[in-house]
Length: 178
Image (tube, rainbow, N blue to C red):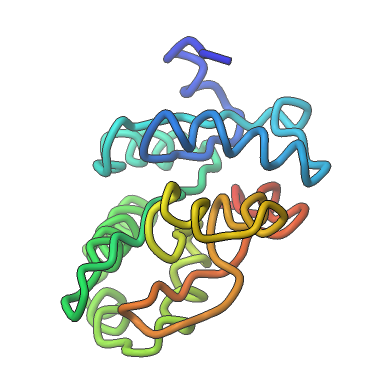
């Protein structure tokens, strides 16, 4: 269902996603898990890319709860694109909340080698990812796992392999918590 852009600035929880695939699949997956987002007043908003800041700043500033679901985008032995993207989102959220650049927090998160611990910490800020990209993860999963993996993977891993936490039944509800 296509929504009016102004709806994203009403005081209802928002899940920000990268593109149209996530915008359509996240509500379907949530409904399959008996968590219909429309009934909870949660809007899924595509940012048509990976720049979440223009959406996150006003949402956070207006006190509208939101969560971000972004791809991990691994790059072989290099740091995944999703790692730095997650750091940037967390930094923006904390800077708006506190009025100060969170240098210590970002340095601490940036130094983490354990992907599972990094995933747990960024989830405290409502930032979630998958193992690879939505499309690759869906292709590599069984049909039952595909629904559960729509927002993030089922296991923790190291920095290169993802290391995000699975959004379980009811997890989408709690993801929009700040």
